[in-house]
Amino acid sequence: MSTDKFNLANISTTDLASREERQIQQPSVQPLKRTEVWAWYIQSSTFCGYGWISAWMLVPVLIQDMASKYGVEVSDHSIPCDTTVAGFKCVTSIFGHYVDPGAFSLYISSLGSILSFFVSLSISAVADHGSYRKSLLITFSAIGCLACLLFFTVQSPKHFWIASVLSPIGWICFNICSVFAHSFLPVYGRVHPDVLDAVARGESQNVVRKLEEQAINDISAIGFTYANIGTILIYAVCIGLTIAMHGSYMSLEIAIAFTGVWWLMWIVIVAPWLDARPGTPMPKGQNWIVYSWKKTFNTLASVRKLPEIFKFIVAWFILSDGVNTITAILFVILYRDLAFTHLSALYVSALLSITAGVGSYGFLLIRQRWKLSTMTMNMICLALYVLQLVYLVGAPYFTTNFGMRNAWEGWFFMGYNGLIISTFFGSCRVMLSELCPPGDESEWFSLYLLADKGSSWVGPFISGAIFSVTGDYRRAFWFPLVLTVLGTAILGMINMDRGKDQAQQFAREKDAASNQEH
Image 1 (cartoon, one colour):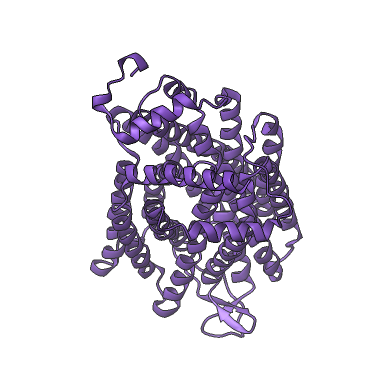
Image 2 (cartoon, rainbow, N blue to C red; image 1 turned 90 degrees about the horizontal axis):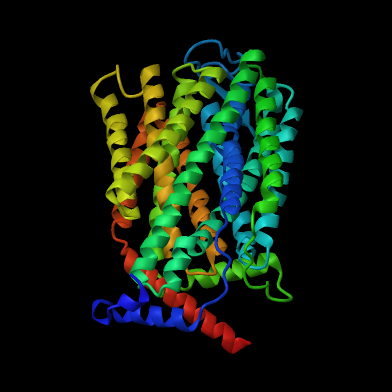
């Protein structure tokens, strides 16, 4: 709608105020460049290759396998574990306590998530100031790459503790890079050419919001599609290494190292085209860690002014743990109960990435065809998750032949999860992009990933505990089912339009307060 056809009778007071602000203040903003967004696509696909392959699958498998071979039989602790027997029952001595190797790998994942929570909380808020966003992205990519290379020091099963130490370091670097990379998304939405053109024409707030939502959704969905393509390429190399080296420990270590080198190499290559889009300068004399904790505390204290985005953070805290726990339990069952080899685990993980790419692009077309909102896309994905979990929870109570009792079920559910997962995670980060106040992107995406990783230790820990009590990992599916239903109910209570109004009002009040201080 152009300026000369603007009808005051058809707009709200909020839209009118927004239009007047844009006509009075037209800041000089560099529109989003094609090279810039492509650089973002590439860097996202590189560290996702590490996170989705090494952190989620290769490293836990390596730790679990080594801990098993270093362990003893459950029935007689004087007999070394025989891992050649299908469905072997072994335990490993950890600080004098005997622990199931599968549960131990879940506990290590929990530890990595807890450490990621505190490190991210201590540094991520500074990325909204100056050009730190890009420089910190490169720095932590380098540290993550080094951690991957150090896996070569794991020479025998008794050294599984080295891998157990390196795993949390890799998680920390991956999660911090995710914070900084995700924080580009709302910035890109606001500087998208279509959005800037609409602002220049004096379009209403509703029109600008719709265009911004569309732009962020498209960038997010395409980003996940390319991330899955990049991950599939890495899988091809890892599978080739595993076949050539007959599934040895060294093949896993080389594959982990390769994901780290690939991660750092492409970050460095695309860095010149990745515009940092710096924010306001860092306040003078501030310590990074103290400033980050203080800023996060002030953000949490603003719950009364931003109730809708806090509903989202609570829902995401619950849902992300539920969704991530599904995949974690599936991997443990495949490897421990269904006798999947290293190579089989790589194949099924590659299937997850292939179907994730297909699902991401397919749901993108569906959303564009029927012009579905971000909330609607999330609800569709969550309904599909609940349907899956009802089967996984219910089947074992009625039959011993189904309910993750067969290898084909493992293949099916990995593919099924792949079709949903990219769209769900993509829609969630888009929802946050729409709700977060301008100028605080890294801070809110830090909270977003802190909520994710801050809760992700709960699922593996509870799953390990359920196994310890029941002796069956299938019973652990009850936990993500409860979380998914509860999180869906909270997510459905969010009013997106009201949340966007709250974010803009919060940003205006913050700017006014900052101007008074200066």
